[in-house]
Structure formats: structure tokens, C-alpha cells
Image (cartoon, rainbow, N blue to C red; front, side, top):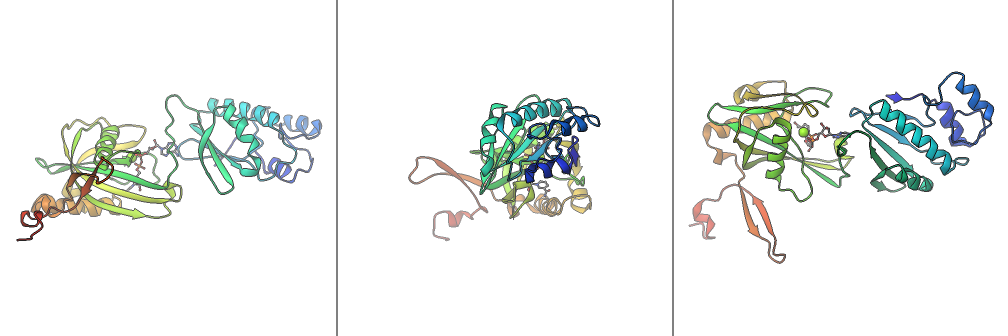
Length: 316
Ligand SMILES: NC(=O)C1=CN([C@@H]2O[C@H](COP(=O)(O)OP(=O)(O)OC[C@H]3O[C@@H](n4cnc5c(N)ncnc54)[C@H](O)[C@@H]3O)[C@@H](O)[C@H]2O)C=CC1
Ligand SMILES: [Mg+2]
């Protein structure tokens, strides 16, 4: 959804470089055009570039491939004015896409606080977090790893579920989120469950892995989504209102049967129910830690429990 008062006219003026009457303040165009446009719009209410609003309240701006008449000083003034306006409007962040041939504007944006998000082929993407506190923008992905925690209270048969705030459809799912660099998947599950629901938990096993390529939520890269079985250590919910709409302890049987879930949640709920009834050893991929051969480091290995007779390599 477009924000600000941008019109296609101003873009065309930019892209073509034709000195038509343009409302772009940093285009060198006849003064008449600017004063004409100001009769309709206040100086702060129009933008020379199309700024699109995303579902997280951020704005995205694409600089055109060709900017024959634009210069850095005018861009800087426009950017400073725009940042003021976006902050006043309560926008969360700015995503600025700059073609490689316009790289001189990267330095201008950097002087206003922008940093690189990523660069690919002929475009770089810079971001600026506008709100208070640390940026919530996700870093760039090669592979993205997401981990959820299926926290099952075996005394009540209830499992912890949430509905995400920023999703188009509000389905029940297990709390979870993206793994941080250097973070073990079990720790991601525990951390995300705590951040989203306020519940403390303990890692028990890995239950499933979903691999999806060209994932829109992973900047078109591949997404690995792992679900872990966790044991609750606390029970009183205090969910994060920025990330979740709802959170509750739900009967596992009810979750396994209900339609109002994502397909993965439904399938894993049934898997978990099977383990709950028949024994978790039937569904668990427990974790063991081993020393890595050359590095002096350790790694974690997840697989089905081996019968004791096979642990010494004989199978007898
Ligand atoms: N099958 C399922 O049931 C689902 C699986 N997934 C998987 O979960 C993993 C990701 O988990 P999530 O809970 O989505 O991540 P998450 O819990 O790490 O982060 C979500 C939060 O990050 C912030 N955020 C994310 N993108 C933002 C942006 N562009 N601008 C501002 N804030 C932003 C928002 O506060 C958002 O609520 C992925 O692996 C995905 O495939 C996600 C949803 C459903
Ligand atoms: Mg999440």
C-alpha cells in the first residue's frame, strides 16, 4: 500500500531525466513546477519516490536505475525530510534498494544512519530502524533455520499454542522463530518459547524437519523449519503482544483434530499424541554431543535411540 503523496509523475520525471514539471525536490527542474505542486501539497507531504508500506509498518523505497539529474545534496535533503515524516507517522523501518550504478547514494544514506542489509547482483539493500530500541529487522539469509517448541505437559495432556500477530490467517501453531548464528536448535526452541509465551522449558528431542525452497519469508532462500519436543518448567503464560495475538494451553487431542491449525502443526500434533499414548521413544530423535574430530569443538547429533546391543557396534 503506497504511503506519502508520491505520484507516478514524479517517478517518470526522474527515470526519463526529462525536465518536465516535477515535484521532486531534489530533481533540478524549473522552480515553477515545484511552486505549482505546492499549491496542492505541503512541502513535507509529498515524496519523490514510491514508498510502499509493509505488514510490519516498514517502508520500502526503490531508487530508479537512472537518475541523470539527481545529485547527492538534494537526495540528502529529501531523505532527511522523509525520515522525519516517517518517524512522525510511526513507521517501523526503511528498506532502501539502491542500484549498483547509483552507489554514490549509499554514502549519503549511510550518513543518515542506514546500514547494509545485503547486496546481490546489481542492487544493494540498506535498512534503517526508525523505532525505539534494537532493530527487529531480520538479517539476510542464505539458509534460514526456524525452530518451534511443542511444549507438552504430560500431567494434563495440554500443549502450548499461539496465534501469530503478523499473519494473514490466524491459525494455532507452536511458538517458535528464527535460530541465531551459533545457536543450538534446542536452545532456539527454548528461547523462542520463552520470548513469545513467558514459559520456561527443557529440551527433550527433535520431532520433525520441514525443508522449503524459495521461501518468501526467507528472502527467497531455503527455509528449514524444525520442531522440538519440550518439557514445561513453568506454566503461567505471559505472551509477547508484539508477536502473538493469542496463547493458551490446549488439549493435545483437540489440537490434533482441529482444522484451525497449519498443516505442519496438525501433523506434528498427531505425531506427539502418538508418542504421548504409546511412548515417546517411538517418535523422538534425541540429541547427543560428540567431540568434532579435528577442531577441538563439539557437535550435536540427533537420531533415533539405538538399541543397547547396537551401541557397541556388534548388533548382538
Ligand atoms: N508451519 C507453521 O506452522 C509455520 C512455520 N513458520 C516457520 O517459522 C520460522 C519463522 O518463525 P517466525 O515465528 O515467523 O519468526 P520469529 O518468531 O523469529 O519472528 C517473528 C517476528 O519478527 C519480527 N519481524 C519479522 N520480520 C519483520 C520485518 N520484516 N519487519 C519488522 N519486524 C519483523 C516481528 O516482530 C515478528 O512478529 C520459519 O522457519 C518459518 O518457516 C512460520 C509460521 C508458521
Ligand atoms: Mg515466532
